[in-house]
Image 1: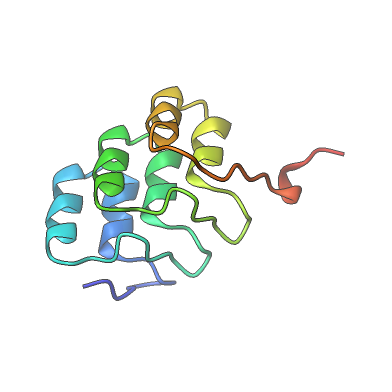
Image 2: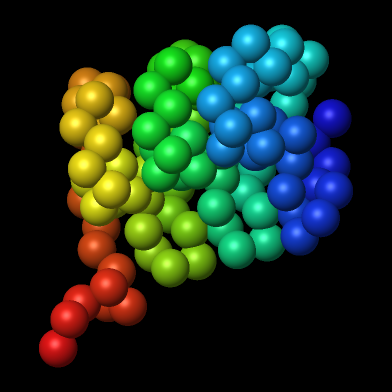
Amino acid sequence: MSQGIHHGVTALYVASQEGHCEVAEVLLANRADVNQAADDGVAPLYIASKKSHCAVVKVLLANRADVNQAADTDTTALYMASHNGHCGVAEVLLATGPMLIRHAVAWRVT
């Protein structure tokens, strides 16, 4: 169910990226790995947060998505929600409880 189709991208990743909440629920009910990341370390929660798909973020969190999981760039779902101005998603992520706040050296402006 969680096998990547291209560069490690799974069906759950695509559903999360496109905001298809019901598809994500079906995949998770059929044992899709909620934390399986693509080859670049981007997981479903990260991409849903980046795209401001708040309903999908809630479904992923309800299925134990790791809110602290970072992509290869050392950025998290909270970082992407904040970076893109998605306040509602950031609030949902922060409501999950204690989390590790990360920043990426690659994003610093010198």
